[in-house]
Length: 487
Image 1 (cartoon, rainbow, N blue to C red):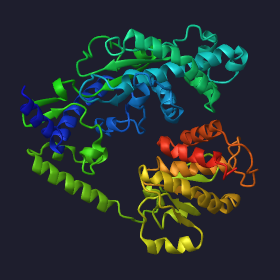
Image 2: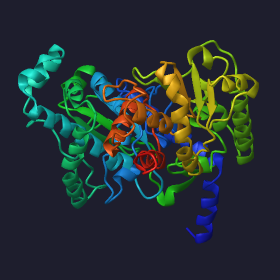
Image 3: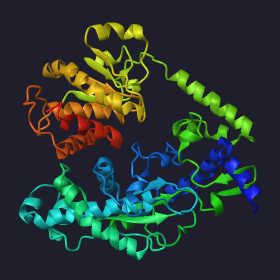
Image 4: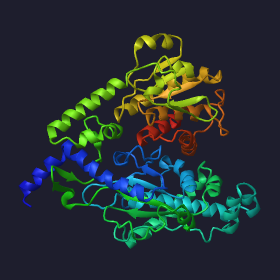
């Protein structure tokens, strides 16, 4: 293939028509695998994996395993991305399927090749370490009959698989050994956190074990237990099936009838999607994939995105807004819809908007005058980090009275994942004690450590699964509480 031809294919790969057709093709494979393992929950790895998973077949909550945590030399077990919520689901359902994809140059993304296997090994290692230290009668005293049998049969943890599992063709022996050496410190980090490892031990009757599937995998070989609850139950491990959705093709692109296939098309959809989101794609999937040319597809996308925005205008529904209450703190975190007036004031006494577009001012001005509404102009992305930092003193002062009076406080941003989580985190660092109770009159001079901030974040994530603040957001919260000005 000449350089001119390659450049032509690269140009074609950038248009949304080819991207969506490629995603459509890959999603057919994901559906085929899901049907083959019909008893296992199908879980999308944010953000790329969400494009390939049919919402009708998907587990309600996604996971977030970053490829960067598996990059060579940067291997990490990140407590900010603990994905604690799927562990109990894996135990209840006997395993799971996690979907992601990768662009040119790889068959399997680092998120599936290394990040998730590290996660499995660390979870297994923490459970084994806990059981080695726990007195048998204490560990067995609580739990169901099955849990007691499990703990009694493997209390020492010596028979429990704690190894790092990988694909030799993807991860070299040398890299695998280097990762294995990192595991004990990762286990130490998990055990030192506020994560309830004894609870993990009770849930997990068997260790987690990663298995890999790509479009070249023969599903008829090696998966004779698929679809059979009894056979699945007899496995000595919980299978965590790591499904790489895209086909590996030369140069990451392949000319096909009517379109150019682009490997890992869903990656970085902000750059090509023109405002289209996975849920919009699936709602209009057939229409979009039936488009015969680039212009028709682009026009459809423009209409779908426009109509979606029109449908999201404020309406009074009378239903409780989508949000998550953080334990007994009376603080909730939600998305833009959760702050929609007037409904939001039926369920919350105070609403703090962390930078989402404001709903009609006439519905909020009076609430702001009465101290029931606060708008924090925090932009999304890097520009918002400085604004978030400067807002912290104001919001902590604003919320002190309502929290003392046990009023219901909602903190929301557009998605309820980053900015609102950072603001809520600051509230908990300042006003929540180690028992999970709000005490606004606590000593302000008490030391705030990185571990305390980390534990407060884990508390948030245990109640709001989608909470995923950026490193920059967390850094601003840490900087504020550890600054000389605060102290």
